Image (cartoon, rainbow, N blue to C red):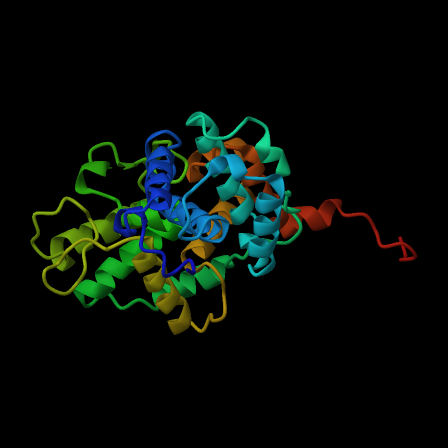
Length: 314
């Protein structure tokens, strides 16, 4: 069963393996507090592991050996792209922690999981220049409800540095017009933050709410433009809107469309003199290690402190 075809524990056949998988899913949700996307990815990996480990036979955790784990993780990682190669190892470690919690396996089996090399700062993160960001936003026509909504989405990404899922989940109750602030609910980082509402973002939201948003009982800000005018389904819908906007501006073949605007926002803050702590607070990073990658995007500062190439003239 591949990752995209994974139906979720709730829809799996009622077998002993599926019951363990359902329990694992609930553990990830209620104990670990993982986001829905991470839970789906982990359960897809574990589902494939269980299929190879026991198949239709009865599940016997006492027969689990370190070679079963290491072989599976290496095989899974070998078929994935670089950024996804850690997922099998992380998912199986999470499974082992759950099994230990349930008393099904002994402690210490996590040590059998091979670690995937990862160099976080090995490459520049993809980003947009300030000129490219403005060009993309300027290309959005605002004479239709769809255009007004899409402009608000792009500005939330580019000016506020929001994640796609945070944009999709934004509600009317999260906007404080009197204080000019925006409450970002817990998403990936499980951490709420309150951000000042940029003037052009506030105006775009006002225009959309007054002229573009259809009447709906939903408190979600951003709605689909076709009946029944329900909320955007998930972060993928925001990413698709960002991708189409980039294409209209002539920017193609770029990864993580919505995240490009978030990276551009971080780069702008860094260039304006914001500290890593300030950028981490705005972006909702738990660790400064995540924020540190943006230092590589400040090329002007880096070039000023770079050492001369050996053999070059002083």
